[in-house]
Length: 430
Image (cartoon, rainbow, N blue to C red; front, top):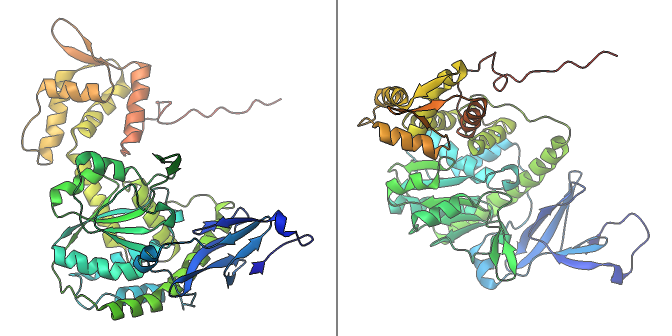
């Protein structure tokens, strides 16, 4: 038992036992769970670059202890057997890439992508929205990929399906091999990555916030996970299934190094978070989760190696925007809204169809469909005896700006618009 205290030694009655699955303490120190023995858990306490491992950590008035888990969970989830030094993040990434057999992926960029996913699964605290990756391809290839990820990802748990009774306190990485869900269920799980979302369970609440890598046999279902999800098509390669002994050896070699990477990276991030402003990301089309990925890639020196992935994400987002009728409506009324006055729905229809057809839309939208889209966006139409129109009042113009921000569109800014370019009020000279 390791103890840390500043004043006189407290009495046993002053202490309160508390189970922890790993956490960042208010003073910036970090607790995490290890498994130095096959079926026994211990804690690592990391502060000031120094790590201490013991069966419990006393930080008055609390004695932190590892969680008591069932044998089934201990058998299913690989915890690091300890902590091991690594030469550099680049060398660690190289080891992760080499964990996949030769020709497992059809390209080197795919190999780098999955090595990066394995690495960032150890620092989920860095992401306001946890990554969700939807994998399509041949089932055999995906299952071989999941076998390898179960050794590389932090607390990976191979699942037949997602459910609300899972041990979410583990903060595991879910590898879902069978996704037989309704559209409603997918919508729930795609919104479960928020830090603030909780759902009731008996007299308590649970926070179903986990990183998910999900196999979708039907590629058409991938879109139901939303624009923030990463869609990855696993091209046919030389999928190789390793033996259980080989998988165990891989985990024993890599996970202690990944655990030390986690502790060091989080400690550095904590120390900088209060003293530095948020760094910028090249390219404005990335969505929040993708942007977080690129920020981490910048910090660990992997942005250049992963540039093909980020470029493909920008292209995919751009394609989605180009074919989205709601976005076409906003683009069509953006300039007229800044000119003021009115705009007929028929004129909006003409502009929308021109945009959609230029990007390969199969058919034109009629005026009724355009009107329905405008209504769904929350914009009220006025009418005369002959036609319907939008009147660009200050309230509607402000609403259009909010919609453009919500859809994360990069549209021209107008210097004479107080919303595009807020007016700066100079302080009075006394």
